[in-house]
Length: 52
Image (cartoon, rainbow, N blue to C red; front, side, top):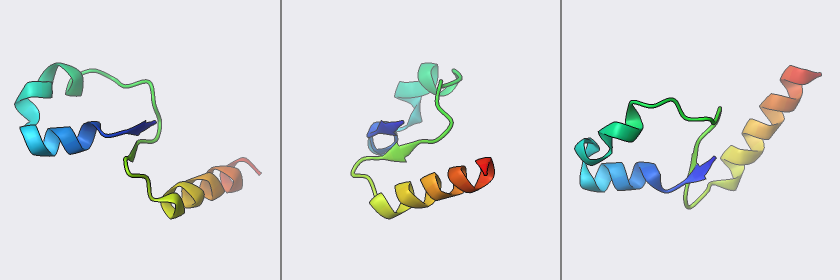
């Protein structure tokens, strides 16, 4: 999942997002915007290595 959500939590504080933070998100990996493409490629590489 690619999101700017964590940036908003840092700026506005976790209180405003408590209802979301307590829920289970349907994502295994979370990347923040702007995305670091090296981190994404490293994660893809890790996933492929696990499955081979």
